[in-house]
Image (cartoon, rainbow, N blue to C red; front, side, top):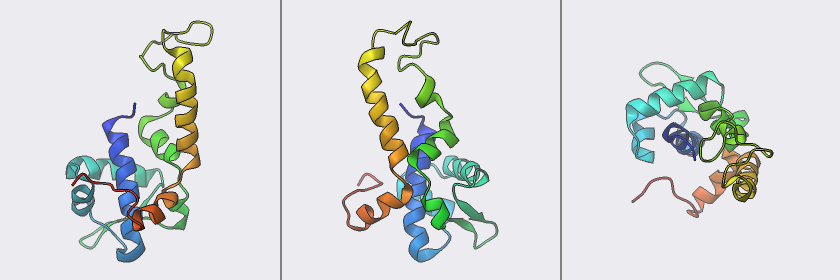
Length: 144
């Protein structure tokens, strides 16, 4: 459904938001370890998200990434769009270029409701929404 980059971006943003509360800047190596992802890959993703102003960065030996109150209002949809573009809104689930209401693929109508629910979930949930649940250990970000 989402690219690996998008999956890592969402996990990294949530991880940084958690760490920003107490520790300020979070380095790439700590983020990569915290979400079980390759550091070089995470560094590139976070640089791109920073350029798109979804999180902030500080350069230098004590640098890293952090989130402020404005960043915490970013929805999951904002992250998906920043990394994967608008494909979730436009593309056919099985990759047909001409799939549409008038020219549907074999799963078009069945997937339509799933897609609507997925888009709603992405648009209705912000990074801030997940912080409390993580604090209460209702969710996790890394396989044990």
